[in-house]
Every structure is written in C-alpha cells, then in structure tokens.
Amino acid sequence: MAKVNPGKDFENDFKQSAEKHMFTYRLRDPAASFGNNDGNENGLRFSWRNMCDFIAYSYPVCMLIECKSKAKASIPFTAIKSRATDTRVEQMAKESEMHKGLFAFVIINWRDQKNKTIAVPANLIVSFINSCGADFGLNRKSIPFAWTVEHGIEIESRLKKIHYGYDTGRFVDGLKGLP
Image (cartoon, rainbow, N blue to C red; front, side, top):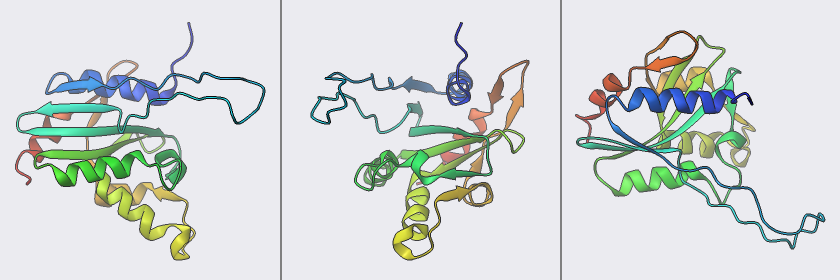
C-alpha cells in the first residue's frame, strides 16, 4: 500500500475532526493532464482549479479552508500561490470579503513545531505576500512560523495513536461572534 504524504494525512485528520462539529465537503483534487507527451507545449492540459481544499459550515459560519502541512519553520510563497495572476488564496479572500458570514482560512500544520496548527485568515496571507514580496524590495520568499502564530488562531491538537485530532469545535465557536 502506498504511503500517504503528510499533507494528505493532515487533510484527512482535519476533516475527520471537523465532521464532529460541522458539515465539511472536500473538493476533489485536480486530475492529471491530457495531451501529447512529446515535450511540446502545444499539448492540451486539463486541470480543474479549486479555490480551496474544503468548504465547511456550522451555523451561522461558512468557511473556505486551504490546508497546508510544513516540516520547516516557514512556508514558501510558492506553496500558496503558483503564479502572480493565479492564486487560490486571493480568490478565497475576495469571496469572503464579498459575503457576510463567509470566512476564508489557510490552516497550516507545522509538523516540526510540535504539530502546532494555525488558521490564518486568507486576507492576511495575501497582504503579507503583497507587502513582503520582491516587488517591495524586501525579497522575502516565505511566511515564517512566528508570523502565523501572531496573526492566526491556534487550533488545539492532540495525538491519538498515530494520527492527530483537532479541536475544531472551539475554533468554530470563536468565529460565530465575528462579523
């Protein structure tokens, strides 16, 4: 049996924990490609681009959730956005700003930081990338763990036997009073 990568393990553990407190729907990952494989760039490539990994709902809160799992003390911008014109997190942030009761989070599981799991609002991630990127002369290429702790919401976790469980109930309850 093939080993699941740590990112997929985190997504599965988070979904199983969340199902106790909210409705969750895991959006399907994009399929591979179709086209000629001769190295020619003219081949067709089909790939659905979801704006996030999950849609979650617990009255009156609806969330767009992108999960990331990192083993290092920072997460590269490239793990969050692939091109300047195509960023899932920007799309999540725009949607959450347009709809009352819709929240967008990048939930980062920091494996080498005692499995700390931090939910950072998508709009703060976008602002950080835009203000610290090479366009502003700062040449930063990643988001540090300490910044996510300062600007995010910690989701408590506990090790069961092999996998982790996450206190998504407390996390959602904290959002219910927000505008």
